[in-house]
Length: 157
Image (cartoon, rainbow, N blue to C red; front, side):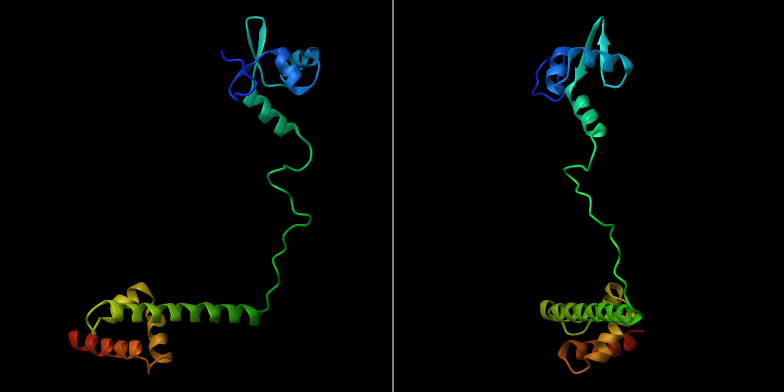
């Protein structure tokens, strides 16, 4: 048995616990007998684990925890109008379309061919997103390639 005040799994005697908690030995003995303090008895001697004492101290403390400060008021989700919700949804859709266009352009630049099946882009993004990208940016090189892809798909099928 290791009796060391620095080791969290160390066993501590009644006198050491009294000194550690700053109370009288009689009080520690009484708390151990009443089961208020985590302890075990080996023969006629009470033993205490420092880690259990530390947990007991944290559990029986009053007030807020030092690690997790409590907010002064509960979190209230801000009210959002239907217009704002619709705008946020439109912005999310536009971001997805922009990401789709960027992916298509990157694919065209990195792969040495010019004809692809639209299916591979629709697998990554939805068919609606790819067609929206095609409609919105019909004059750019990447979307022109998409139009070629659509024609190629029809001839393959």
